[in-house]
Length: 626
Ligand SMILES: *[C@@H]1O[C@H](CO)[C@@H](O)[C@H](O)[C@H]1NC(C)=O
Ligand SMILES: *[C@@H]1O[C@H](CO)[C@@H](O)[C@H](O)[C@H]1NC(C)=O
Ligand SMILES: *[C@@H]1O[C@H](CO)[C@@H](O)[C@H](O)[C@H]1NC(C)=O
Ligand SMILES: *[C@@H]1O[C@H](CO)[C@@H](O)[C@H](O)[C@H]1NC(C)=O
Image 1: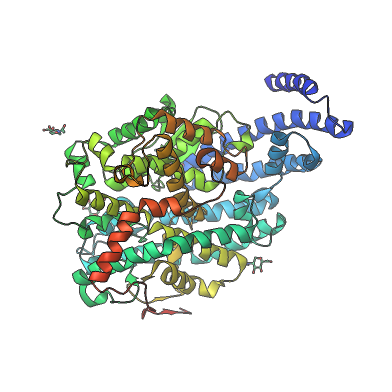
Image 2 (image 1 turned 90 degrees about the horizontal axis):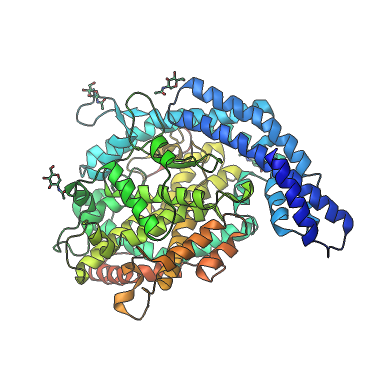
């Protein structure tokens, strides 16, 4: 009823506004289309709300019954989506004069999964659900007591990688985790790829990589992949310097198992996937004798609790004029791992398309890594809240990388020494250049390794989807890319009996990954723009460099961020980028500028140590066949 009223009202307003239209037929169709769109958005929103609730129920309680309910609903919904889509395609929307209406039609013109038959949808959801469950419930045995076999990824395996410096233990955990997941989902993954490829074909794409890149709409495939490659080439020299420096340190510690000029063994970098090396930052910091600034220790010393971490993150967002978390958020979110059921611990932020229900699901621990993750996830919630009143198709990030960049943008200020000091997490003088560099090193160890990793994950998947990487080469190609881009090698030889991609959450859960690469580039671009607006950035003033800037409580910076986020996907992403930065293209120069003092130091240090920069071919093999 309300919708009909609203449509009528819109009709009236619309007639007044469009008197100068030239083609009366299109004009009339556009009026009808507007009314249709209102109903379409309402019905679709309701469906998504119900589906999201069922997905939440499964993610937070991994039972077969819950998987069945969500799968059944998704299959039923797909029938409705297809009927609606057929209606959408009857409109001559490309000729519409109203860009907002036209763009909504454009976004609805991708049918997606619903192109599959009902049975195929059920299969697709079942495979993804089963793979995610295997991943989320896998257990391994303890290294020193092999009869204890209940270590799970979060928290046990993550913590061992973070804290252990015993090479044999790390190797055991690294290999066991891969044994516990990969081989069990390898064949399922092949079926999944087949269904995804079919979805792509039914949507008139060559293969599923094209389907996935639709989210970056404005550029054809080649140019988006090309842009990423160009950005990677720009940042690669910095990554290689860090790689060479860390390899040198690891070789001193572990001896000849770390080769002098080759790739780094993947189990030694403080992280299950070597995607962040932050847990080694303290081991290899540039100035080891400077006062210790261990954020995890300081969080504990300051009696931070899980809730206090969330409140601290919220405080930052509200200090720059972004919305605070609503009551429902505090009521319905899951902040710690429950003990009475299995859940997907991988942190995520949720919206339910009803304008009031937003949640985070996370198995939070009081550590620096989780402190960052909470900011990251809350950034998603801020985005959801700021675009919640837009027409439904626009309620998404300008592109997926934008969505991943919001929380990290804020983290860049939070992790400035100035801000850490405000939080009592940094207890030294702010004019000590050694401490400043140690801090920058820690941030580099967190962010830089994610660049080649995030590029690698989707390069692999693009190859798999397009058929360039065949099933009997899945694992060896994974390692070829790991070596080429990240400069890593496995601690033990691998074969096609393994399926190491499966040991990373986003593969079984079918979540695209190149968005994280885009997000790293963007967050520094946003940070530079925000700091400029806050009057804290001047590249010629050593006290106003990018890595020192903190936009806390700065309304000018906050207003700019708010404007960009409020656009959602109502405009092509280069326009959203432009509103914030005055640039239309992704650009790595802000990132390079931010890390310039670190890069200079690393180059000097690697020269002094006479360290080879780059890596030669690994001697660890991967054999085809089992
Ligand atoms: C988990 O879901 C099952 C249904 O599959 C239900 O019986 C059970 O109560 C749920 N557990 C919790 C803690 O919600
Ligand atoms: C793991 O199992 C051992 C013995 O089987 C038990 O003592 C320990 O409490 C268990 N740990 C967890 C986290 O369940
Ligand atoms: C943290 O808690 C301990 C024990 O309750 C207390 O002694 C200490 O003063 C607290 N520290 C801070 C910074 O509040
Ligand atoms: C996906 O479809 C493309 C185009 O038909 C084909 O070349 C490719 O081999 C398919 N990929 C897989 C994994 O089946």
